[in-house]
Amino acid sequence: MNNNFEPKIIAFLCNWCSYAGADLAGTSRLKYAPNIRVIKVPCTGRLDPVMLLKVFETGADGVLVSGCHPNDCHYRSGNFLARRRWMVFKDMLEFVGIEPGRIHFSWVSAAEGAKFVEVVNKVTDEVRKLGTFKGL
Amino acid sequence: MIDKLRQRVKELLESKAISVFIGYEKGDNPQLARPIMITSPDEMDKLIYDDTCIVMLSKYLLKPEVKALGRRGIVASYSNLRAITGLIQEHQITREEVYIIAISTGERLPEYYDEVIDTGCKTDNPRLTTQDETIAKLLKKSPAERWDFWRKELEKCIKCYACRQICPLCYCNRCIADKNQPQWILTSPHLKGNFAWNVIRAYHLAGRCIDCGECERACPVNIPLMLLNKMLYNNIKTNFGYEVGFNPNVPPPLATYHPEDKENFII
Image 1: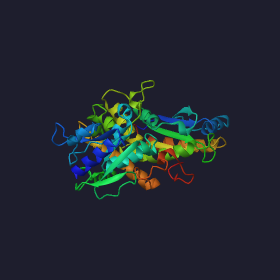
Image 2 (image 1 turned 90 degrees about the vertical axis):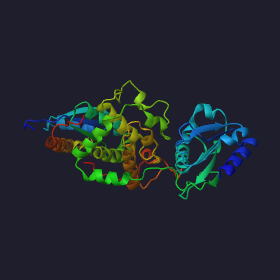
Image 3 (image 1 turned 45 degrees about the vertical axis):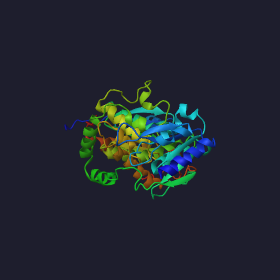
Image 4 (image 1 turned 90 degrees about the horizontal axis):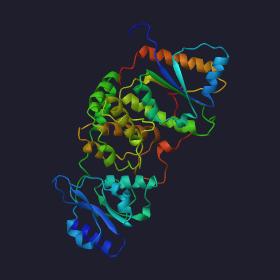
């Protein structure tokens, strides 16, 4: 692995909280790792697990899913349902051999620009350590 | 026992309590009985029940052509009973439209049947029960080794979808694998599509798989599919204390939530 490896990370951000959080980080001129490619989704509950697989299939090295804190979901229960799905799905991906360090979930509210920076940096660091995803 | 079953089916058909009975007849393969739809009391001598009756019958309850015949009777082993309970839970059939003759094998039966017949068969079906050990062994390995294991297994997949066709709980009219705008699951038998298909198939059955083992038996290239299913089965049991196929009145675990669900994995 050469030292210049920069991971590609796909970040699914929910429209109502995390995307606005990312926006806040931007308008506040906060700096964070440029490795994420943001995909805006209406709600984390909208994410089909097959989308997370597609991320790896199409050559990304990691994935971040971020949504509203519990009880803050714009659609009331989308993030609760998503949480259960991830709970099971991440264990399953781990079981088939995708390192757990490649899949991350977080709650970032619209007011948490600073937390968004923290999350992105943390995720980027972890995926960088794991190197390129060579699986598929 | 078989006389008793034939007698009961005959009575049911004659009294018009049911208009079709789904059971087994002798097939071309001596090790595998073939499903049969009996509509007339004269066909009783075709009906059999023995250790070769492995194929899950519950799937036939959903076929439109069988549904059209009217109230259906069915002979249900332990796995079939759980599948039927699962189908009732997911509103695919109602309790009233099926008459269930359960086959007692000494296991804890779901409470959804009309009568029980003791067959004398000791086990339900010759199911594999060794998955738990293999799963534990796999989990001790590194992710790279596990990936290697699954890569080798999934490369064999020829995308015949036999696992889907035989699964008693796979009943979608349009499966995600058949949708092509967008094409989430690549159709060619390449590791990419094979991986997505097998993982998503198992995931769609998380909390719904009744552990009957039919997918693995149907697989022509012997992929250990039940390892995935059983891993999810155990996961759901640990996380939510839920086992499918016993109580149709609770929501499936992934279709509901609890505000206090664990979230130690979320940043």
